Image 1 (tube, rainbow, N blue to C red):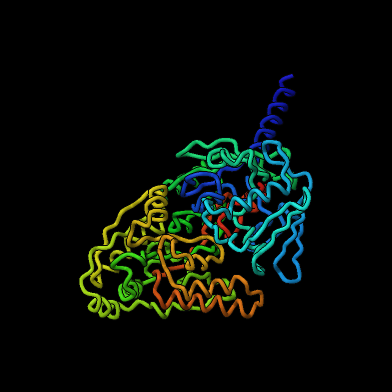
Image 2 (image 1 turned 45 degrees about the horizontal axis):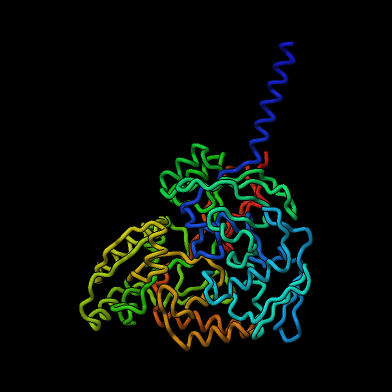
Length: 487
């Protein structure tokens, strides 16, 4: 009897250990301000909900390819102005309501409405009409041809939501994805559970918890203690060598779409003077920032474009580190008041800000640093435009078009650039698109709109038994659909 009891106990213990391997805890630096990707600009929103809770007609794959999602296929008219999307059958929202063409019409009309709160309204600007042909067919008519529409609809800002549940999306989101929102303990974590009625392939994970740990030292301690299983965007790159030397972990280094910039308020004095912006650009030593803030991880950039993109041109020479040129420009400008440098929580911003402040001081520009929490930064800097300088990574894919929006937070207003981006939007020829992309890169570099620092590296740490986490970050996401534990 004792032998049977011991065997049963061992079997039970093994079963519990095995069951634990279908849950995961991921670390994140920033807590999202809300959980509605269609009404917020913070990357942390998509890092929780993209492809997990919410889905769009299309989606980005781990290599950046645009893949089918809620739409299994689509056709394009000969003139390129009408897209017809065929939806998957049997898709339901987490509250049990059916997802059909009417929900797509609602979502896209809401995103492009005059009073929309969508942070990427420009993605939908060319849409003239959205109609439900039948429950599983949606027709999108454009004012002009746009070969980028499937790409635009893959963004987190373009996910499909339902009128019945959209009002609760900020705090209790209801989507169609493989995971269901379970709990948000603000200041600590968000928990998701497997969707038992998912229309697609069921995920291997039964539960996922996103744990918010802003402090790099605390992030290191949490990984070492096993309190988190993976930290896809690890904030303490100086410790990566320790993880590489420990067989319990694996270090995952890839690239991101994150152009890290010293953003400048172009519309407000004294930064409305291109000479001052150019002086700041020449005062910056990018490699020192990469070494000091990112411990060598990052690629120098001279414009707002990812170096891994085929259309990228290296314009770092236009703003090379040249303190004497910076001082000469400042002599032309005259006396400059101390500039307010507003820093959000990520370590690249806080560490980088201190380095940049010292570099600017060495040429005669004083700064006043304010460390802001993420919600403060979104309200004061991004929405309120109440700043002089700030440091942030723009992690949205191929987003140089933000410079065509005069009301965007750095307030660059150049009609010539706006016309260039408008032309890009209706151009399908790859060679011509490449030419326009390169012209756009050069224009903002020569206007010294911002200080272009580096392309953010994706430095992650995970338990060595976890597979399926993205190596690169073609969009701001912690896609869990392919994540599993292996022995």
